[in-house]
Image (cartoon, rainbow, N blue to C red; front, side):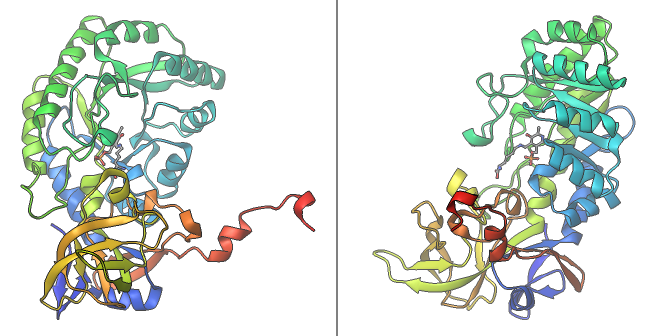
Amino acid sequence: MDHFNLSNGSIHAESVSLEAIAQAVGTPVYVYSQATLERHVRVFREAVSGAGKGEPLVAFAVKANPNGAVLRTMARAGMGADVVSGGELMRALAAGILPENIIFSGVGKTREEMALGLSHGIGQFNLESEPEAEMLSAVASAMGVEAKVAYRVNPDVDAGTHAKISTGKSENKFGIPIDTAIDAYARAAALPGLKLQGVAVHIGSQLTDLAPLETAFGKVGALVSALRAEGHDITLADLGGGLGVPYDPALPLPPSPTDYGAMVRRATAGWDVRLAFEPGRLIVANAGVLLSRVIRVKEGVSQPWVILDAAMNDLLRPSLYDAWHDIRAVKPKGEKAAANVVGPVCESGDTFATARHMDVVAADDLVVFMTAGAYGATMAGTYNSRALAPEVMVSGDQWAVVRPRQPLSALIDAERVPDWLAD
Ligand code: LLP
């Protein structure tokens, strides 16, 4: 459920009209609803509350939306963070997320990133290979500190999601093969500067079926027992993120957080460890929209081309994953027809929808891409020298620009012309 609704014939974010935001800030612009973010945090927390030992650690996957106002909302709700770079770590800390609630994931952590995490005393490093364990051991030892670690295991389970966002198959780059984990833990236990405390798994994103997750968790449970039998003190099992959200209202709803929580309870019964979760999309996807204006409508062979001022550089998901986002008129006229919706970038891939049955729109009308809060603004780039779109946070009847539009001059000012080309 979200807080973007039609009110007096035009779509509002909570009590604020999207038209008013477009007028004040221009388009394209991302708009987030704080009430929706807070609701999703609450719903997820309630769904997993009491599973495992003590209260679970719910660590928001910062990659889904690293905007400072979003992270501040997470911090105020007492959420942890799952980070995958020094930059995400700094953002999480700057927002006030407690270091002990931060988990550092990713296959390519550098020495500098490890040292940064260690200097802040973060809660856990999820290691993805033995060379990484050796590097972290060396960095921690040199600093005279102990790194709390888990191995991320690759359970070789097909998550049934898009190939580009599937991470739990043996051919994916993530984690160590689960059947080699016992030996890897034994070797890591002998390394100085590491405190082996956990096991981690994450098999993919936008999962719409709980069965692969349950299979993966079953394998992790068996591993936890086997590691205990070997004498390791495993106290935390990080079950990753991945729960899908509804994008297309015509498709069956994905499993609810409550269904997920029930499955987690079943799968983890008797593990006797604290659980951690890393939801990203579930928290933020439906809490954000991308607001855009129709530049013009051009005649097409079968359908008209609706050309927007948003493009693939602003919202990459349709181009990259053939992702489907609902596109609505901000002031629907009650008429629907098929259209191709595209951006101005000079690539045929800059297509948001083909032969989409949608609200009829004309030049200067506003449209919104729904469910754009996750992996939207954060994946934006400046291709075709298009400046990054601004972001706005709404709370009730108040709203604020939480990242201003990048001025075009910033694109030029960021670069340097070498002396020999200067004259
Ligand atoms: N934990 C780890 C280790 C991850 O790799 C991810 C996502 C998450 C948690 C959060 O997963 P979520 O709950 O959001 O599904 N850009 C793609 C999605 C990439 C997901 C990468 N990893 C998209 O737009 O669909």
